[in-house]
Length: 258
Image (cartoon, rainbow, N blue to C red; front, side):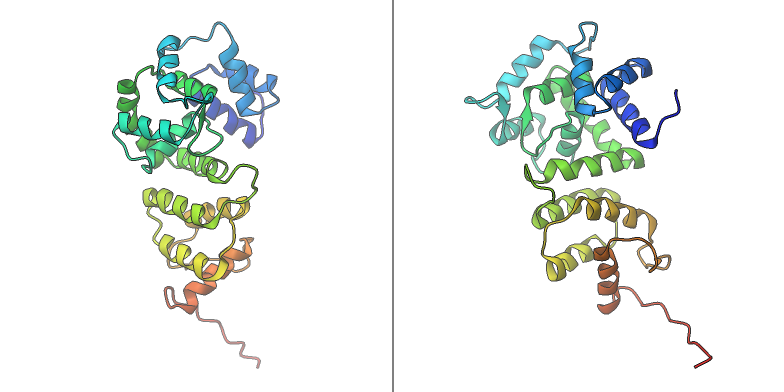
């Protein structure tokens, strides 16, 4: 593999894991689309030699079962029906993983390309086959790298179209859903703190940095570095934990020269 930056390497691995393409084919598609993942999927799936275990005619029939009668999209009603067919609740985190595989741009929506392309990439062409895949898709959340990818995907997916930030209520709901998987002990305090002190939309930077904080800093904050480059909101959260006695404030060394 040519020497690539981490961002390009991550995209290459994600493309291969979703499409099952060879590294050479993945590189060609990504270069042709100037390293835009969505564009690379377009390039890949438009090529006549791409074959999947999925039968395209059956995928079209499935799509038509769920699509809105008045537009070429699957909306909430179709997704509710899909969840019923899969025997999962719409708020089940596995539906986030399904959306990640489909590279869905927006929560509660699938375009035809997202739905058909995602199922094709998974190699399934029936609800039964997709249902059989759900346990392995759920287990991907236990893989640190996959969890990070799904977590970062969730920000763009869950925020409202055209907005740069995610509504606070949405962000809290997504954090509770995602960290139920990672079992971060401070998640409920974080949500309480945001509602009490912040009450504003959540930026992408705060979203991504919180995962780093949850991963790197143990819940007693013994290894928290006040001089670290955390967003101010995370520093305020630490102060909130000290003030409320959730975590004991470290003893400051007294300067003996005074």
